[in-house]
Image 1 (tube, protein in one colour):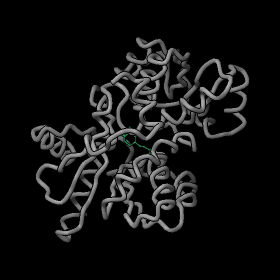
Image 2 (tube, helix red, strand yellow):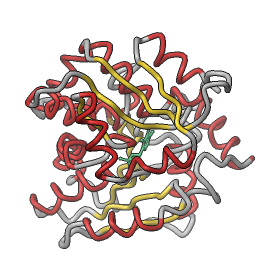
Image 3 (cartoon, protein in one colour):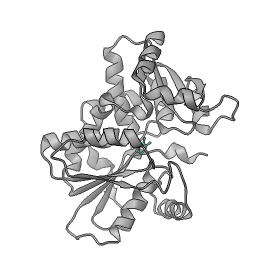
Length: 293
Ligand SMILES: *Cc1c(COP(=O)(O)O)cnc(C)c1O
């Protein structure tokens, strides 16, 4: 499917999620929703978040998009593929230094026509400040999308998952900014589904961000958050490496930063025993470009 068609389908909630759903190999009663199969370049929850931001862009009077990410960012990669497909000018504000060798992620962004600007740690830290983003927006007549595609526009199309998710007792997903989880949770609350939402936090310490996120979680939804970071964002362990290899052999490719850690957290939890009639859905949120390191 072409990217423009995919985004329209997502916005109009016309996607048949069951076509992307399969049993988790090796594990009865558990399904996995393969958002990695949505599109080879615009995959996972980034397609959903960008669909909402695209609608926002189309309704405004913007000349370009500006957004933020690290040198391996799935969000930058997806946004660059999106911007190329829709012929939108894109400026990526990248954490790091121009002198460092380009990562495969950033090479793709450049090849797809994105402009890169490198920010040192302190300047990159300004990205959460409203005033800083406003100034950027004015200066460039741009839509400024927060890191990770976060925000209510990003949540919009994620809500489209809730109806499908509502058929399960439990829904597990990896959380970074928590945007996907929030989008689904608000819609679960609105539809009064009893599904329990379990967010596996892959960012070890988000401090203030996590507190804000917890405050925004709607009441009426049964949810919890569990730490799956293994001590730090993008931190790898031998156990995680083995798990990725195992699922590769079973035909289920996972990424090491988000979905691998989701599976690890879920399988550890499951060792404590799961009621056979309990139906669980896991979200494969994509991110496979991150394997090219
Ligand atoms: C960005 C990303 C996430 C995190 O999504 P949030 O909405 O920021 O919580 C999860 N999985 C993958 C593969 C991602 O690329």
